[in-house]
Length: 308
Image 1 (cartoon, rainbow, N blue to C red):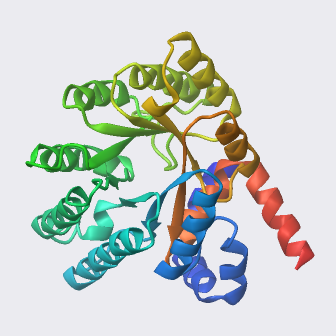
Image 2: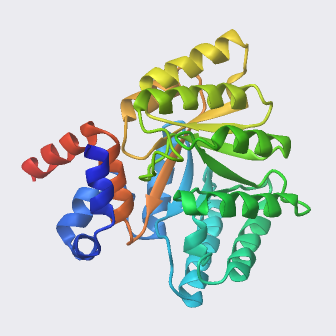
Image 3: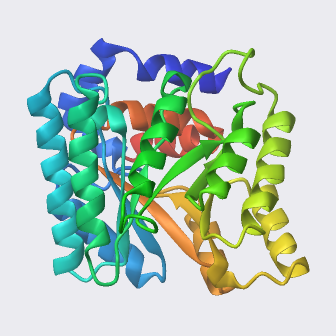
C-alpha cells in the first residue's frame, strides 16, 4: 500500500513541478540525491570512495521529448566520464534509454549511447556503462539494445544492464544474458506492474531474487546484487562462503543515503560494495520511489523535517 501510494505521487506532475522548484524540496531530497550538478556528484563520489566503496553515477531523468534534450543528456554523461577520469574516481555510469531519446528517435538513442559506451571502453582501465531498466513496456527493447551494444567490437566488458526480480520473465532473461556473458545488476524492481506479469507478494519477489542471485553468483561473470534487504544479503554472504566464491567475483550495490550502517559493515567484512549516486534537477520521481520502498525512509524524512 505504501509503495503504491508513493509510486502514484511520483507520477503527479503538479507535485513534481512544485517539489523540483522548491528550496525545501531540494533540501529534504539531499539524503538520497547528491545534488543538482556534476561537481556535487564528484564530491559525493570522493566521499564514498574514501569509505572504501565504488560508485555508479546517474544523471536523473527519463522520457525526454525531443532530440535536443536527448543530446543534452548524453553530453552531460560525456562530462561525467571526463570528471571520473580527471578526478581518478572509482566510479562508472548508469543511464536510462528514455533519457537518451529512445521514445523520440531510437536510432539517435543508439548513436548517443553507443558513443558513451565506446568512450568508456577506450579508457585505461576500461570504464563501464550500466543501462538501467525502466517499466515493463521497455524491458525487451532495453535488453535488445544492450545485446546490440555488447556485440560491437571492443564493448564486451563495458556495457551491462539490469534485471528486475519481480518480473516473471526474469529467469529466462537472465539465462539469455548469461549465454552472451553480459553483466547484470539484479534488483527487486521499483515500478508498479500488473499481476499478470509480475510477482506481487514479497515472499514471491524475495524467492525470485534469491534464485536469480545464486545463478548470477555461480556464473563466473562479474555481477551486482542491488538490495538493502538484510535477509537477502546474509543469504548471499552464506552462499558465497559455501561455494567458496572470492569477494572480487561480485559486488553488493546499494543506494546513496540508505542503510549506510549496512554498507559500512559489508566493507569491513571485505565484500565489494558499489553505491548508486544520483544527481540532477529531475530528482522527484526517483525520490518518491525511494520513499515508497521502505517505511524507514519516510520516518527518516519526517524526523529530518521536524528538526529543520
